[in-house]
Structure formats: structure tokens, C-alpha cells
Image (cartoon, rainbow, N blue to C red):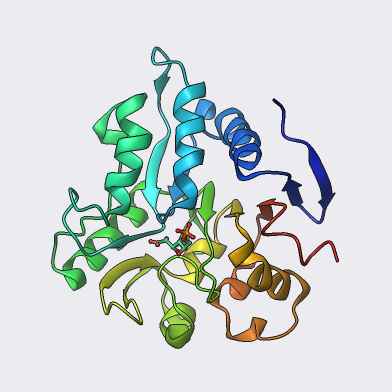
Length: 245
Ligand code: 6PG
């Protein structure tokens, strides 16, 4: 069933359910990016799972995928760990589509974090077009935590988020887990940035960020503003419920 867009303003697309968001977003990503062999950076967490499932369902096994996939962030864990963003994408997407390993540029969470930060910085520089003297990703897909974090840049780490020109080593504020994350400058240098956010537990932070009110200045996601590209929001009704008040 086609997702019903209940509101479409300022590149904000709101659909009745999370499944309809994934259905519409997957069709958009496939036609505009994947079937054109573009460079895509994906996030982790739970929201992308339905999107990965929709993309793999729509991409016939026979179509050889030439797109290159990168990560917005990765936990410093083994690739087989249930916490690995790579493992999630591999299980729900890459294992189900016709793509070569050479097109998948995972962040190696098993490496020494500082070494991996340097390695991945080089990977981005050597494989992506340079725009504004920075590597430029065609499409970056982001989530948002209900504390306003995005990628692995957390509210208490704003300095790292602002000053770094590529990847950095972040630390989860609660678990203290190390993470490798792209910074604001790299993400903002994308041609298109999409926030894919669902669920009522995100409605407050989404409203504050989009309407620039409340604590929005303390949220890293508020500083995601494309330097030359486009910013779009794909939301379900629950995540957008405060917006439509
Ligand atoms: C990660 C993600 C992170 C995620 C948000 C939202 O590695 O966890 O990159 O930034 O996008 O925390 O996570 P959910 O989709 O699980 O709500």
C-alpha cells in the first residue's frame, strides 16, 4: 500500500506508520541513489531495520548493486557482535542483495579506535569526491536519539562534533562504549541528508529541532545543516505528533 503523505512541507514528509515511512523512503533511495551507483552512508540503531528490509525486498537479487556503502558511525565492537551496526546492515540488507564486498566500506569496530579513526578518514578521502576540501557523500541517512544525539555525537561532546574535519572517536555517555563517528562537517558536506525518525519517544526532540525551540541548541542533531545539499525528514505520525499541533 502506498504511504499516505499526511503533510509535506519544508522537505518534511510525514506518513501514518513507520512501515509506510520505510516503504516510501526505500523507493526513493533505490531510484535516486542505489540504481545510480551513488555513495550512501548509513546509521545504526533499530530504526533502519525496517528500511533495510524494504530495500532488500524491492531490489531483485539479479540486479548487481554498484553503490558504495559507508557508515555514519560504528560501535567499537566485533563485527559479529549484536551491537555492531555492520552486523545489522549485513543481516537485513547486504546478505539479501547482489552486492560485492568491495562496495561495502565498513568501519572496523574491532580495531584500535584511534587507528580506525585514522584509517576510515583515509578511506573517505580516497574514495569520495572532494567538495569544499572535504570528502562528500551523496546521501547520508541519520537517526536521532531522544537526547538529540545523531551519529555517535552526544550532547556532552559538542566540541568534538564541531571541530573535527572527518571521523572521531566518541564515547557513549552511559555505557562508555567507544564509537567511531563521522563529524558534523563531513555529514553537512553531503549532497543530501535524510533524518529517518519514527516513534512517539522522538516527538519532543523532533519538534524542538525543527521548530528551533526549547533545548534545541543542546542537541547535536540541530547542527546538521547541509553546507550545499538538501535536508529531508522522513517521519511517522508518532514522531511528528508535536509538529502538527
Ligand atoms: C547508533 C546510531 C545512532 C542512532 C540513534 C537512533 O549507532 O546507534 O547511529 O545515532 O541513529 O541512536 O537510534 P534508534 O533508531 O535505535 O532509535
